[in-house]
Length: 235
Image (cartoon, rainbow, N blue to C red; front, side):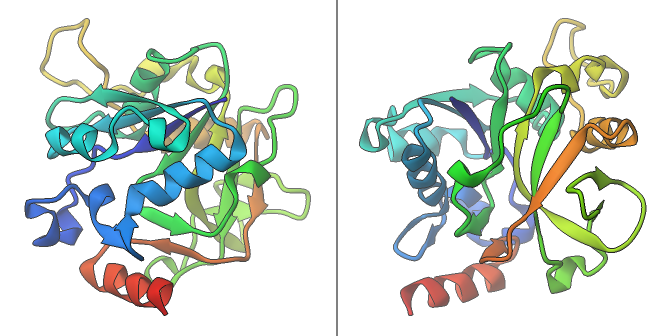
């Protein structure tokens, strides 16, 4: 199994903490935020993990090494400034792994007690399986409609929040070039585009499913949320 941890963000909402420390390396509950994910991935039997990096990229390898501590093989995907967004970052990460196999991808700035091994496998024809959580205060309107059969859609109520944890089939990216942004770089350079439009397109065809996690989840997007989570984990 193979996975990606998104860690290339600039951490602008976390300043001044991220002026000198990359957001996924900020400590919470006694260890860097990203290490909670590595523990979780190791427990589910993942072998290879790509970490995409850009802002303060030089900090990651000294902090995490090659993955031996977790029984993982870590690969570092260096991205230019500005980073490649979620879609471009995932496409580029796949190039370091097996591009024919599904990829588990996790936002590096979330914390959860969801066991990644509980993420459902993709069924034939399915392009993505997303973990959904109850809407937090800062995203009260939610992201996607979650119906009783587990099918996700971009329209309709009630809506839940995407947890930033999902399993993706390579075919989801079959038309990625239609969503790529002009970068001003050479035509053969790395593409930059968001994942959300690809997901919405697949949702229109009924090819994206979700599962509801009712446990703990935090979008560690501000210093205040980081401090609150740290207090909870140490309590």
